Image 1 (cartoon, rainbow, N blue to C red):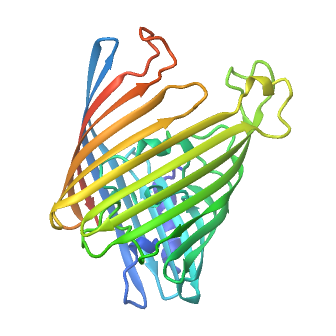
Image 2 (image 1 turned 180 degrees about the vertical axis):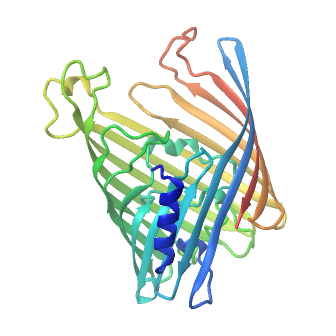
Image 3 (image 1 turned 90 degrees about the vertical axis):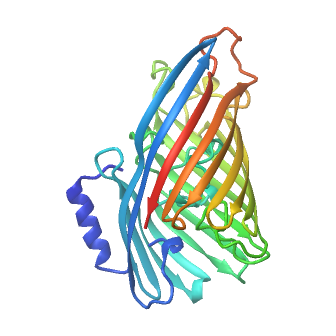
Length: 376
């Protein structure tokens, strides 16, 4: 959702007039607090694409993220507002209010926020161990949505989130979607039998400490309407789509060492009421993805090594699964406030549906990423 500077200022003023940061940013021990949000991620990348023996080198220097915002709150309520200015005009990132009851057992969150799918998806963007989020999670095509969520923690080991959303205004490329979700509903349940697992540092725990274990599962159902037919709409009107997204996760952290993994599945099919003439041309599409990540501090609180392998297929019936192993190193100069990350990754296709000589084949892509991460 793109907003003008004037609208951004108006939203900021309206939120700061009442209780307003997300729980993972909230300072503790203060009856009333206010905290600025400042996150900058300049990124230098070198990508080499190899297709049919021809190589193309693409250097890039960009501002990967530039997020500005403010959070304020009190004993029972908190709220956050942030915008991303990395692409020029301010783009709304988060804008929601949290109201808690029964000492954290129940809380209501309302506004523009992310539906609960998995641990890595819900983590703040500056808390990932590698410069880029797992590509495998892209098969679920989720963005921030406008909605209401009920969440909380029970008995110190069980956390939950359930809600309903009306559909995001933008797709993954930042452009308006064709046929937004009329309804998106579902939730996530996580069990942490050894106590709360730190999430604020992403995959690893800067403080080390005893073992922490977590398991989670999520399900989201959405219905979209007004989606143009892929061929350009020549054979009929717009159609509707039902989509089910499922996710499972596991994480272990112990003394600066971590292992995390997730698997996601998405299935889409024509919604009831779609024209009978269209249905034969709109087969069910099943997407499957997952990743496994290992990380360890080789110098306590300073130097961390990480490796991750992503695998995903946006349509398992057609084939063309992609695999992307990545390895990286992170230097924490001032905790998570100043971090330098360097990573190398490669992406290639397996079981490509096209012949080996086809120009439509997925190229083998090598990339080196260098990111400076600054956050408050």
